[in-house]
Length: 130
Figure 1 (cartoon, rainbow, N blue to C red):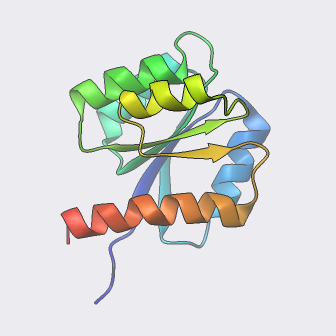
Figure 2 (figure 1 turned 90 degrees about the vertical axis):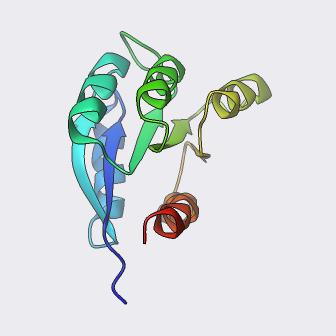
């Protein structure tokens, strides 16, 4: 049975990080269907495109990744959100998980770590939506 491709929105204010994430996902079972440079843009694009997964930077302008996480999960509880952060302090991790984050990718990251985190979330999605 062919697994359906997982749709992803990348929300990251750093252009280079967005490009790196997009490149890591190219050719895998993922389709990057949108990108956002700030928390408010992430909320808007996710509401419009309804991806399976959002890769969300914690620290972004306009609205933080955690603020955007809360708004996205309130409107779309089924969307999986993986936080991307250079700040893995326990408070940030706990606040993100309490607000519905599905996982974490710590910067600096490598392709194996990113793909492993997304694979875990993707497996949950495939089990929920065959």
